[in-house]
Length: 181
Image (cartoon, rainbow, N blue to C red; front, side):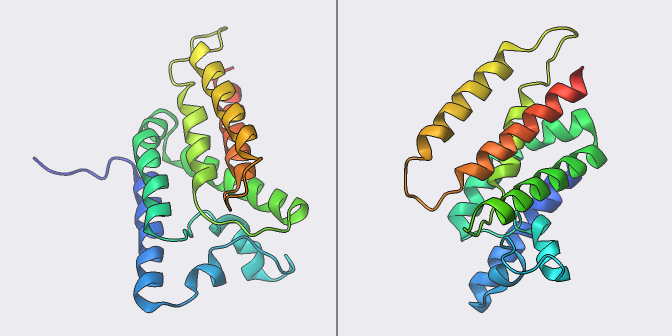
């Protein structure tokens, strides 16, 4: 039996994000802060503009990466099979950009990691068994539990960007709702 590259967008993301963490750990350089953390400089700088998208590839270490990849590898192939690789890549790019641009203009904190993408996939996955004219109760419950948990977590001072989780989940919910109408 052969192993298949069944989910190109999800697997490519996973390999690139892992490679970034490995290079950072081995070289002990600031590769992540140079290219894979949300921009803080002028968006007229091409690297700063690129960071609006690449911040989701950088992670603070292996545990951060493994937490995101576990959920992404669980939900991502289902989404990529349903919507196709191009739409999945589009949803990743849009979600990363929305998180990056809102964070740039609204917050002073820097963000990195794929949590927003993970939560986009989680919310979007609850729409996979959508039937015409009916919003799945699972989608509503996932949104309520997810948003409720993230709103409560806003009260914690834990260096986790609940904003990016909420934004990613919101984008996933919107994609799911718009694609199933």
